[in-house]
Amino acid sequence: MLMKTEPDMTTADTIDDDQGVPVSVKIRERIKAARHRFHSNDNIAGFIEPGELEQLLEEVTVKMQGVLDSMVIDTESDHNTGDTARRVAKMYLKEVFNGRYVHGPSVTEFPNAEHLNELMIVGPITVRSACSHHFCPVIGKIWIGVMPNEHTNVIGLSKYARLAEWIMGRPQIQEEAVVQLADLIQEKTQPDGLAIVMEASHYCMAWRGVKDMDSKMINSVMRGVFLKDPNLRREFLSLIPRNS
Image (cartoon, rainbow, N blue to C red; front, side):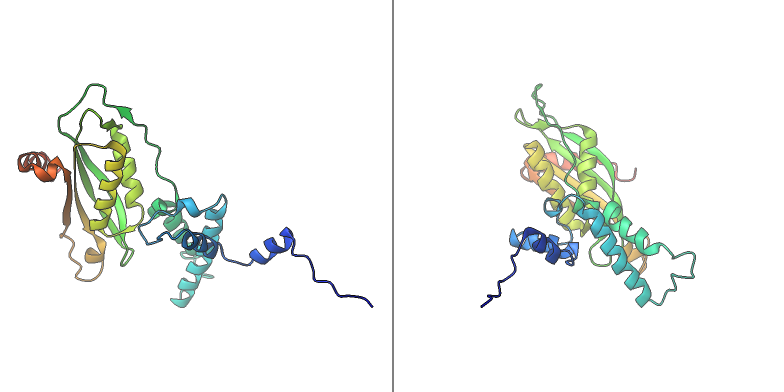
């Protein structure tokens, strides 16, 4: 009597079963398995495997084409929108929201050999982001004040701009973005005090809604001696040329 045998589940079979799963689902499941967040302003680069960002670009392109179709835009005969789906997908993944999908910039840290302990201000640094509510542009400037100590790590001036660009390159709200940037700089430099001021125009107010082109939002984060010493805080704020 012949016995029917069950087929072996080989590695090739497992790979075949996985081929129909969208890459976004694979990435999302890895994040969930690690019990990490994946909010709009979180970096998820550590969960993206080599080659998957290009696959994600293809997936977002298809979904974006569906959005255009649902908006009743004839992308087949309209020469202006024929490749819009891919352009928008590329803009989101590789430009304006790139800070979600790539690792942070390399930052070389140097010891404070000269024991610098005077106030240093970097800015204005131009930053560009987008609000997580409407995906409308947020464009503004940031000033960073650092009060070093003998143990503080010194980083190049351009690195402050690169760190800011990485944090802002995600769907953000301004209040959270400044805190994220402060946490990152605090971790990199370990100063006695850190102060950040951001002033930005929000196109969710200027382009839609109340359509107010002149309003701006200004917020700040003060850490360490900037929080404890009102004179130092006043000195920092007085040295910021906000009308520049």
